[in-house]
Length: 473
Image 1 (cartoon, rainbow, N blue to C red):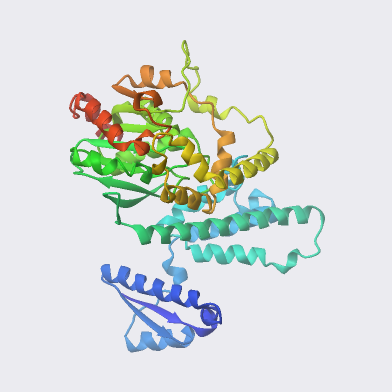
Image 2: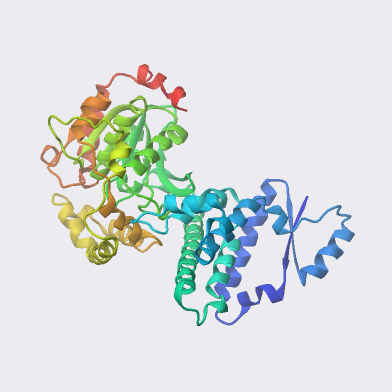
């Protein structure tokens, strides 16, 4: 098979216009990367120029090519492409018969008050990830809707439908642009050595996330879960030290935080618990001692409670969550109860409040960090503040923050830990380590020593809990 890229000046003229040097450079870089990727698969990429209608037939004849496949045919996701077109039509025709009853049902299912635009990534992210649907094609379809001149001067119901359709186009365009942004950022950082660990990336249900990993993968595993507003590298002072002590250490960034993608999803303890569960099964591939700070502690406790066979030990570090003595679990499943609640404020008011708070918090990161590090304020350094601020400027970051207002009612910690999990637990609070809210980063040496001392008393992994893992896989 021969792959051909034809540089058609009429198609790509915008890349060489004055002020568009970055576009030409980006195209050259993309072609270099594509050449390497195809070479790894035993396929040669030929780069040529001219009108493709003239170049391709002549090339096919000279090379005795039996069949020429255009990009349209190579993309196997015809159903996905048709689905995007139908998704963009929903706001115009407004009927399930025209755009498909199944698609209309999916849009309704995934459109929630916290993320009214969440339907696009929820429906199409898998097709985009697998390559069955190209980001460029989605962007072209969305831009065509936004540039449609037929919208001018229309009124009434047609105008309302047009506004709905335009909103969907904006969402689709933002989704593919954000996906490209995070993909390029990940490519620039993949396998980089940071904080004595290797930086890796993993896609969870189409969402790109990163994680730190260090140590022998066959050694007992430790899973480190960061808190609200943080990221995997917040465990910078722990990963390498714990690995040197004989453990395989993993510190993932939860979806919506740090340098992970921030798609329009129903963020909350359920989503993050599902993420951790699948991360353990697919990446770690053995039961873990899970260590969680702040809201990460609550998510770690949820992982232990919902999936005890995956958790060898649980460590809560200034964990979020309440203790409710005498709590009785409802007869309905937790998910049914959690989804039945609704916020006290209207979506419009929530959006206004969250926008104000988000801007306020983003502008005071350095001062807030100093307050969280009372014993060692120098650890709240410029790098940490810059990473938090950088994440807050990512596409979709405000939507993640808005999700806080729609969090489900949490189960009590005592119910998760004592009744659902029932395994070994270590609780580290502020008074025990003489540090602030994030002792693992503020006083890492003391924190590591306390954690390792406790872990030495754990029974070796490989007992009944570990044996249950293959059944979950």
